[in-house]
Length: 395
Image (cartoon, rainbow, N blue to C red; front, side, top):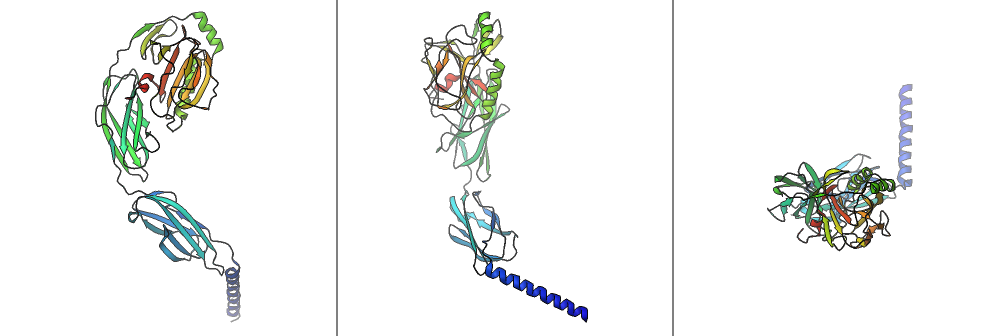
């Protein structure tokens, strides 16, 4: 009997304590409830979207889509327990929508919290089509330009060709046409090849297109030159090793902005009087043996101005034993323009933006050069391609 009375008294004290604590919390709680939401905030959605919400205290919960109640005054008793709900986006038009969570606790003060977030509905089927259905053809050493049209905003697209993967990007900020530039090496064998385009939209739908392209043979010329050995030794003392330049170009291609910094066609870097060595020429020298000259050698007056061929960012400005005074302009998406043998640099610094036509230096004969000329080179994903092709309106 004594034990029973003790248990009863203890229970009564606990009950009174709980009632007292609850009463105190009810009247004096001024903390707003905390909300955790998963599923729709800043997301792209399609179909029925599964979401959940958690609160840290007993509350009444309302969920609104575009200010229209989806759930109204739903009692949440268990704190920190996820409550699931579905947003039926098929009942909404495609585009931007708002989602609001209003949470009011059960205290005397009715402490409230409201969070809002945007989400985007995309229930449109993904469609992709080439801007040209056939006739993809490119010469050795040139660039294959692939374009396709999409019917809505996409998350990513890529082209698989020649055992490589190339990222695609929009033609401009408001265009529904995407494009990809695929460099073709001088050594690639003439033949017909398969390529595929893979597109993923904002909600994960995928679309694939297959096509073929032809690589045509290019008859590269041959050339033999001789450079003064004493000049070569002096250049090695003045400039860094060409291997260091190649290392930097590899890094620049990898870190190139994922942004198209240029618009329209490229221009030539000088008013060309004459091309002294065409792209892909098989050159023979005493020092380097036989190799493909994957650039254009062009001339104008000695020390005449050399300018940027398109908008971009100055990525490199330095002197090397082979290329002499060298400037590299990054046009974004791994497209680089290189200018060798400059007599002097223009007033430019690495990292600054440069516009088409702005000076990069003057025409010279520094480095591995027999006379005044400009070595003009372009690289796409660090592969050398014919720069003159990029100046054509048809490209």
